[in-house]
Image (tube, rainbow, N blue to C red; front, top):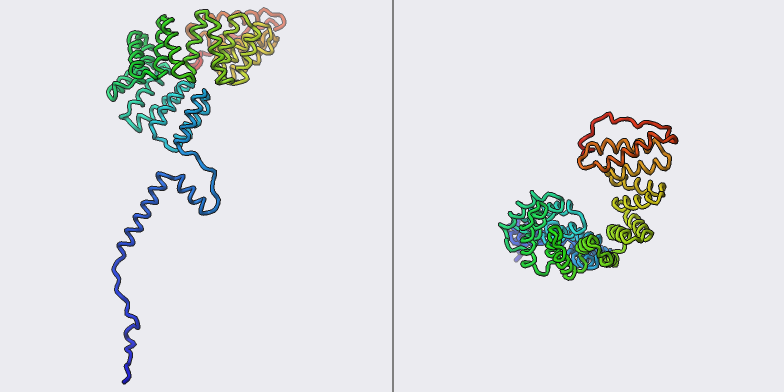
Length: 409
């Protein structure tokens, strides 16, 4: 018997399949996991991709590693390295308040209060309920001379956390800026009570005690700040300046030596050491230190000005002209550097340059309040030009234009 095959039917009957929901769910979960990993751990994904390609990159430090580097650099007094490390960490975690707050505090210590204020605004925008943003903003505004506006910011922070010591430290500086001395002292003392290991609290208390004439107490508080944090540089400067004003010169010099031991090219410390040695009569050593200061940082105009004055007093007018010219280049609004550059030109018999600079200085000084002593020096220089035969007895031109707002600032 022969069995015939019906060729209208397939040899193997296919099973009917439903829609592959399970496969789609697994695929979606896998993609979501990959997206989460890329978003939260981009470095791990990047390294894995390089590894598959057989070309592994140089490992990039993770944020916590950058913070560890920042802390180590800060402890050694290397502020530029510490700031750079904080910036690297923040680049990877731009809204991390822990990183931003410490970075902002260090910016103020490094004389960069404007940058610190921007960081504080970042914190208050990202985390409006975090008191640290208000504390940093109050402190930065006080350092920028905006004390009246800083006080309400600090009081607003009190509504968030009235037990946060650094907020009282910041308010102390703001109250001092408004000459509200009792409130300034009380706030600083509260800061030391709430944060007994925070060197900045004792530094703030020392500053307000200095401003109120309590010098012995101020010295004690500054020394406490230094003991608590031996690498926090500002209390050294404050204490050394106070000691120098009290004629405790060697103690001040020793403190500047300690700063320079941590930061040998700290232009500000070199300048202060220069002025200290000038005060005790070691002129040549003072000049050398001022030269070191401008070599360390040519843009540090107070050092350029001081070096120029030293050279000018020694009648080294080529050298004084170079220093005052550098000062004016980096600080074009400096009235003192402008007219001292003019006087240096005069003694070098460069009469046209001298006349132009002194005439500009006369116009600027006339538009400013409390510039009488500067104006007297300028007028004396212009009178010398007008009567000097070697300068052809030229009479300096009278100002023809009203000073601009920028000139009067």
